[in-house]
Image (tube, rainbow, N blue to C red; front, top):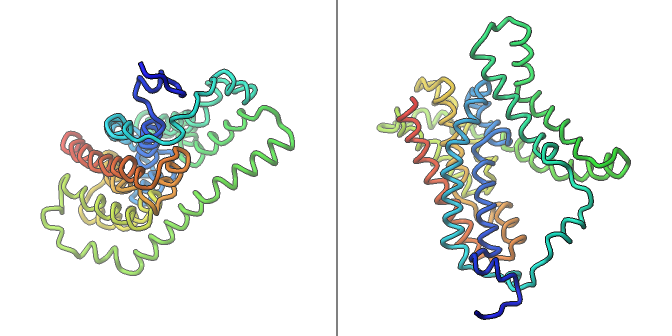
Amino acid sequence: MTSYPYNTDLFILNVTIASMAVALATGLFATHVLVPPTPGPIAAAGNIGAANYLGTVIVIGLLAAIPATFVGYLWSVKVATKIRVPEDDLEALDYEEILKSFGKMPSTFKAFLPIVLPIVLIAVGSVAALVGDSESTLNVILKFLGAPTVALFLGVAAAFLLLPDMNEETLTGWIGESLKEAAPILLITGAGGSFGTVIKNAGVGEMLQEMDLGMFASGSLFLLVPFIVAAALKTAQGSSTTALVITSSLVAPILVTLGIEGAVPLALVVMAIGAGAMTVSHVNDSFFWVITQYSGMEVTQAYKAQTVATLLQGLVTILVTMILWWILV
């Protein structure tokens, strides 16, 4: 066998940096646009009147995200493994040495708690809203804790358990850096909502309502309308969160006109918008540049690996969403 200066085990398994990057990116992308408590799906759910059905949106989002993630994984195995970057030829680093460089690591429980806690609270709150005595003390407490704002706040509070020490470096330095990283997301979400309101007030929403949707006016085919609008916005301006927020603002009046209401139908509309918001990630998307910079891929390589993968993810997700509509609605 030919001798290689890099990790031959990875080579034999046909695992390249590009394939790992695409597999990770597409999995993260699927949950980012489909599953609360990420900001895009939460904002979309709120805009179309599904804020009280976040538990259902989470469940439906997980169902839709699984095939989307699987498609991304298949693309990374079949296509991205053929892309090699200079870092593939570097000598493999020792895992134990890398682990030691980080010092004491938090436990698995503490690491997952900020993510899992809000999801569990929202799910419990959704169940409490559907069953039991709505006036009982326990039911009121569970619905309060399951409110998205409260659940997410408790998730943030749980993240403080990850701090190794409560000192100036962590409370001022680390948290300050975290706020700087989170600020663009908050600004994008707020700006997307504002832009959506501007577009709606400009008459685009009314124009969509007045359009003769014909065969798209009812049933699962209607899901193609928010999908196409979100895909156009995503492709044009790059931000999935903005596409989710604006599209949900535009289609909300149409849902009322068509009588689309209830937990499952509205959750599937959020999935259709999310499917469009996946289609496609290219050079005007900051996430595209994160993948290229950290993986070492060239732009042309990233187009072949990441952009096409997100296109396939969006198409598969809207197809799965339409199938779920046929089954559940």
